[in-house]
Image (tube, rainbow, N blue to C red):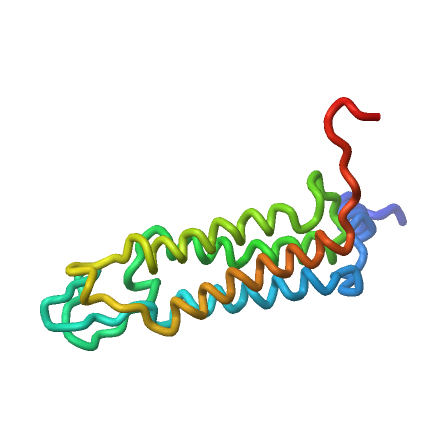
Length: 175
């Protein structure tokens, strides 16, 4: 046996040496923290009561009965997943920032787009295309309002960040 390290020891040593540095939470700006809080609010709201059934004839996604409360998780099959994905978007951005990974787009821009999409889905399913039959017997509950606030807070966080660090862009063809 020689004193040379085995290949498995050198492989694990090189993996440790190439591991990224610690996470630097001081890199997070105020707007990103606000957006993460909005994402948490949006995620929690998916499990709060969004709709209330008005009478014994009202049905929503297989649920029936007067006074029955339904969350977005119970009432909305596809949108619940989309809203949860929108809720984690600011958290993913925060993770990228604290790990100091490079971005190919300006920080906060994609988060703003995701927030606008989430707000649109929330407004459409609450005010324009309300689920259930008859739709007049399905009313909005507090969870819907919490989700709307969560989406708006994500958007406000993205806008705060973009307004603080936005660079002046020139139109195409201008040097």
